[in-house]
Image (tube, rainbow, N blue to C red; front, side, top):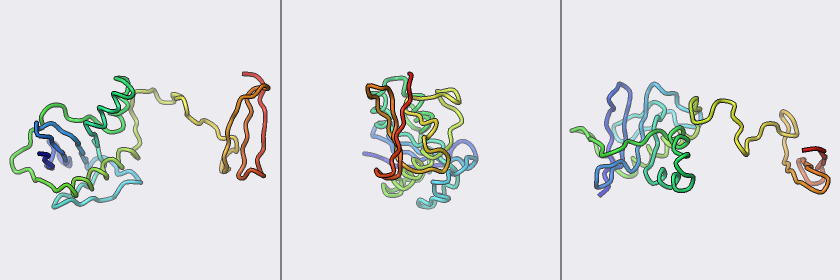
Length: 179
């Protein structure tokens, strides 16, 4: 049977929320730390039962989510996952006496808040050095600052070309020679 619980963490201002499997291992974990900022897209205050989580989420990790990420992308994906969602508790979770059980609805509300916080939080550390270019990274838009529109590139017999505009009739095309 799945158990959902929350309790204060080992340091001041830290609240730990767990969804535990029958073996006591964390299926999902959310942690809120009062010292962390709340991202702009996050909730300013989340009430679940009697507990108020008034800080940013430091963890929003799920065992199944982590497992599928590792299966799909291999072991190199682990530092990326942990940078975005935090480190999931390994091994059985020791629930202190007096820890409160929470309902599924309360846990879901807190879980969604923690995931939103982690997705919109600015990450200053990670597996890539700052300034790294990753495949698919947009460095410059062809329409310049404050411009709007769509664009695409294609490679034809004359080399790469690009098209942009806000509507098909307003599209402009160009050609770049060379590699």
